[in-house]
Image (cartoon, rainbow, N blue to C red):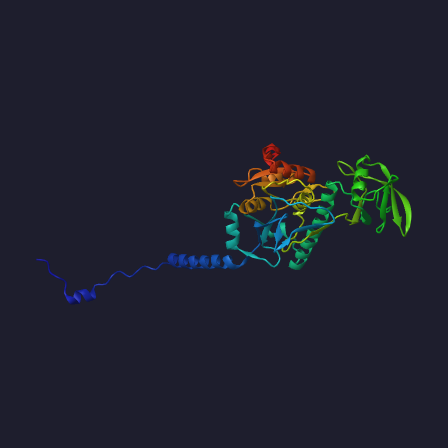
Length: 368
């Protein structure tokens, strides 16, 4: 028979005390510190900028109940399609800090990108200065788009071509002065900016040209040695043109800045001023800067803009040729991307897409 332990025995038996070692204390403290550090980093500003798909706007439609593009002084025509400008929402710049959680989310989301903040925003520029520059670029892009669109449609757009300065080391330095108004090139009048550009196309780079300017109210001929601009000769002057538009075009858009909507503005103007229904019911998105000569320039955040276009129902996207390396292999499902380098190419692409012939157009994949 087994003897049961007495009550006293039960009172005197002790369980072994838990062993607390220096290692376990160190581990606990380290775990607590790491937890606090991660929690702190999750709310503290991180030195990154996060790009995400921004809103899109139909340049043929309305924003807040008013037409985005209004044209007067010429007959306009309705369209059944959409021409959507695309944008990027950027967090992490001056006045808009991001935390670690937002950065991690940006790394994990295929539609977003994370870059060191100094690659996106100059360190010496405040939030107010950044916004002012963005708005100035938007205004300039609207003017450039209007000039390019009207020129594409065959309008003459007279301009007063006032020199703002010269490029150091060029033949214009010390010859052409700020305030000079350019009126002729090699004896031919240049009443429009397009005339000046066309005249330079016939000049071999490095040759001398006779530049007619009005200085202090008197016309003067200057001899300027041109520079090599690659495809054409350059005067080496900075011009601030004041345009006299033959058609009144007003672009009203809020909360969007920068120059990248230029091409879509130009296409919207072209579509309104032509009787053809170019887009013909198709939703076409796109992006790209627009020069007064009609050249489409590359922009930032192209991959985010592709995702924003798909999100808002676009099935086609017009991308600057200069952005093709970033586009190739990164096109979201449901979107076809067309490569364009000029307003003329973008216009042809818009017409082909509306006619159901988009599969004949060049793509970024074929250029890669």
